[in-house]
Each structure stands twice: as structure tokens, then as C-alpha cells.
Length: 460
Image 1: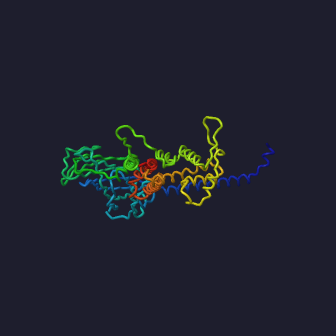
Image 2: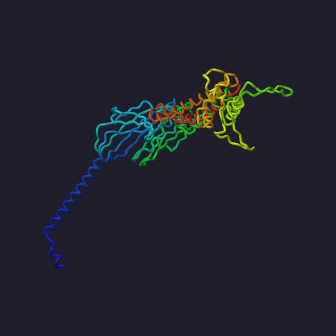
Image 3: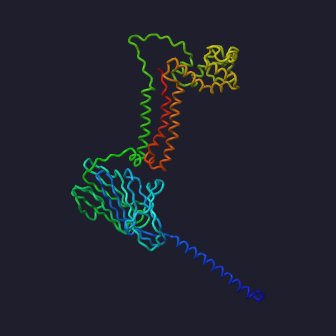
């Protein structure tokens, strides 16, 4: 202990203590400065009053005037905004913003459905430093804002304050001014008004609330005798009932395609002559694969097998069958081209009419491909197009199946591209926003077009 105590240097200890105290003081000053900076940037405000006037017009429009009294409690302020969800009306028109002295202010209106409201009104004013009280007047008109719950009733159902307000509202007042000639005994409302008065033949209902909490809505409903018949357009219905609109649009596309199939795709029913059924000679002019295609309107395994057997019958190919009876899967090495087939393949195009062009093309594919089974399978599209064209030219099909299906396939591709593009643009352009649900239904319905379009080719 004595030896250790004798090695301590008092001056060095003092210097270290002073250094530690200096570093600590600098850290505290930096922290305090950051707190002061954050406090200086913070903005605190609330609504001292919100007085809203709803003037109901006989054409169903609603003239709205909002007196917003802001209490700026901390920070500096130079702009304010109002978000209006696009619900419960057709259009937003006649917008103006004024200060408390009725002096017009500069404002902008933007369409922002991805934000808290679809319509965003933003206005600027001279810089204000808290504490201060400022009042702003926002006026606008919404069209076709009434409902009709019964044949003799109209209803005003308006959310005067939405859930987007994140601050307290000390005092809220909502005045509803009804058209002239309304009998107050026939009114129904929710909530109960503070007072009901009449002036100039018009009825005024005043609703109110105090200390409205943040993110709390205030909704006013008033039923009164009918002043007009309410009608909603497709844009309004699509905007406010998107799921139902998309569903009905899809069902409309399906119904249209079924109707089109009934008119142009359904094959005529055969009529049996009276008496005993006659013995009819089969259409010997058709190749077996053409008969199969006429029945099935596609080149599948039975039609391909019929084509192979027909080529073997004509002496163009040799099919090596199994030694034992029973089921058998044809393999690549069991299909051989004959000299007759090689001479036909070597002939110039159009040298002779036998065999048909599609059979000649199939023989060329089998001769040039190492795997003849794969060559036959890859020729299915060519056979579909060629045989369909031959039968359509002969009047046995109303149109070539490949060409008919291609038209509906193109329609599906076009609708499948255009509809999603319009959906995306709907969240940028206000004119297209109302039809987002319609375009979603059309996009889903495009798959019905290609599905039902596959069955549109028909025999005559």
C-alpha cells in the first residue's frame, strides 16, 4: 500500500479531472443545443374554432363555407391545407380561400387520392410566429350532394369534420340551411341540433360540439321533404362502390361474350327429315384429319394420329407396329419416310395438288427433324391454320378457327394492357379516377374474352 501510494502524481490526477469535466460540459452543451434546435423547428397548433355552413340548393348542390380559426401555439407558420375526400358528391367547384379580413389568398388545388384526401387545397399567407390566432375562410361547392332514402324524402348526409384532423378543436359549429318552404315538422336529424330557426322562409339547423378530440369525425344527417329526384352517374357509382362496379363490369363482359357466342359462335342444330333416317354417304372428299378437325376444331392427339395413318395409307410413311397385340405407344424410330415421300418433298412448291399443302409441309418437317415425333407435335399450329383455312374455303366452317381465335386473343391483349394503364393513370388524373373500378373489371373480363373466344369458331 505504501509503495503504491508513493507512485501517484497529484498534478496528473488534477489534469485528468479537469479534462473529464471539460468534455462532459461540451457534451451537455451540444445536447442542449440540439434540444433548442428541435424545439425551434417544432410546430404546435390547434383549432380554436371551426364554423361550417352548409347551404343546400334545390339542384342538389351544397355550398360550403368553413371558418377555420387556428391557434398557433409554437413555431412559425406560412401555409395551411384542407383535404376533402371525393365521396358523397359529383364535382368540387367554385373554390376560394380568404383570410379573416375577407382578403383573397393564393391557393392551389391538386388531386391526391393516395394522400389523406382526394382533393388537396393548400394556401399560403404571410409568416406568422406563435403565439397567434388566425382565421381563414374556405369556400367551395359540391354538386349532386343529396340522397333520396324514400320517394318523398331527400337527405343531407355530410361528414363536416373528417378523421384526418390530428389536433383538438375547441369549438365546432355546423349550420345547415335548407331550401325555402320546408316544414320543420317533417324534419328528421342526427345528432340533435342546438337550435332550429327560420329566416327569409328558409330553415336553419345549428349543430355544435366542444373539445372535439383529434382523429374524431363529426357527421350531420338531415332528412327533409323532397326537392329533387336524385340520380347517380356511372362515375359516382364506380367511385363510391368500387367492388360492386368491378364485379358487374366483369359480369357484363362475360354476358356480352356469351351473347356474341349465341349469335356468331353457336353451331346450327341439324334437322332430321321426317320418316326413316336415310343412309347418308360420308363426305369422301375430305381427308380423315379434316373430318376430325371439323368435329373437334382443334389439332389434338386423335387428329394427329389420323394424319399419320392417312399418310401411311397413301404410302408416304411406314409405321412399325408392335409384334404383340395390345396397347402401344408410337416411338420415334417406328416412323419412316418412304421414297415416295422424299420425292414429294423434293418437288418444287405448287408442282402438284397431291398431297395437300399441309401434308407436304408435315412431311418436310419430319424429313428435316431428327425426332419425327417432335416434328409432328411442333406442326400442330401449322395444321390448325392450314386445315382450318381449307375447311373455311370449302364453306364447312364459318371462318378459320385460328384466325377467329387470334382476333379475340388480340382483343384480350389490348384490353389487358390498356385497362391497367388507365387504372394507374386514375391515381394521377382526376378525370380517370372515377373509372378505376370499371377498368379493373375490364381487365379481369379480358380473360373471359379469350376463354369464350376459343369456342367462337363454328361449323356451318
